[in-house]
Length: 72
Image 1 (cartoon, rainbow, N blue to C red):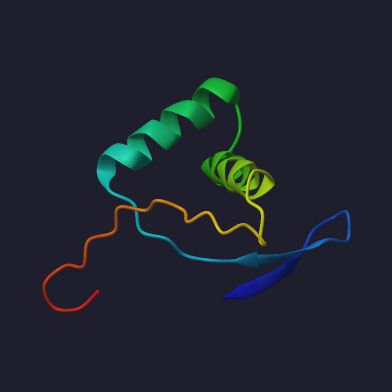
Image 2: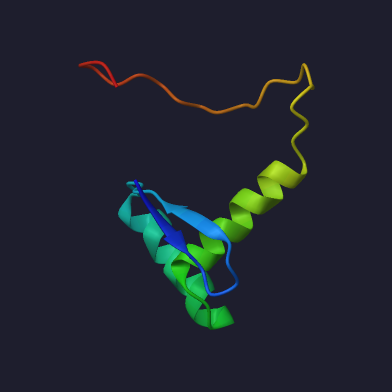
């Protein structure tokens, strides 16, 4: 991961994610329609998730993550 200092002085850490073609197509479409980057669309989605998430909550986030053969 790489850390970048933004023009406003905030630090951002760069990450890499893998997305399937359909997800990337949809994100690209949203970004294009709103004249923003795909990264901005993803940051917006993450911000919305975190805004609704309480760290002290006993609620479990539903993530349908089935393990694939071979480990991950």
